[in-house]
Image 1 (cartoon, one colour):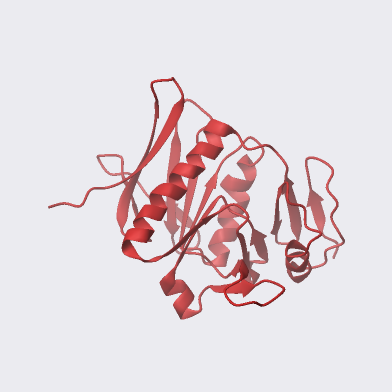
Image 2: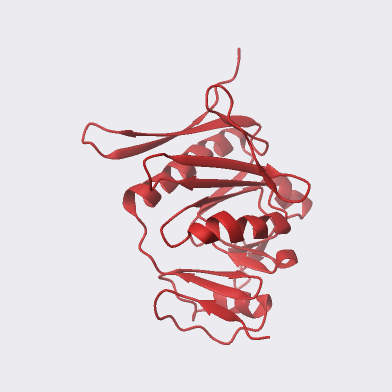
Length: 228
């Protein structure tokens, strides 16, 4: 079966018959570096949109920084962003999410494994195979349907434990945390202080946005304080 291609601008894509073909291409020197290219169940989706500074870039940096501090303090795994290819053969999926967390437990158990680069040199890896513990996607103008419909279904089928969806484009800042239900992700309701609990990190999180002294947006992802 021929693979369909969804794209916004011209980008050269070879004839890809399977996830294996796509992964080989994605790890080759011929793979475009200026766009996000994902493979979802036989469909290649290309997003060449520039990253919006305040509704995407600075928000992503805040998420990575906040989660990295928690993971580093606990010594529990790795937080990754951009150009981190995640492939899950069970769901016919290969994507580059905005933010990924892979726990040491998942790596130690073999639930997730790291794929070496072409040289197979020690400690040189270029792909994550298997379902990460957490994936975060930040909605852009070109990714609404993908982030809210197609990717959640694919991530659930892959076995991803938790999915965070964020949208900073409108007047209301959106932060939705989804955990695994019996047949699909289920949204976690915030508590009375607007924290939503993550089963992956076993703590609550609250995302907020404010304008600084120069009237520019600043994001804050806060971990719920531990009760004394």
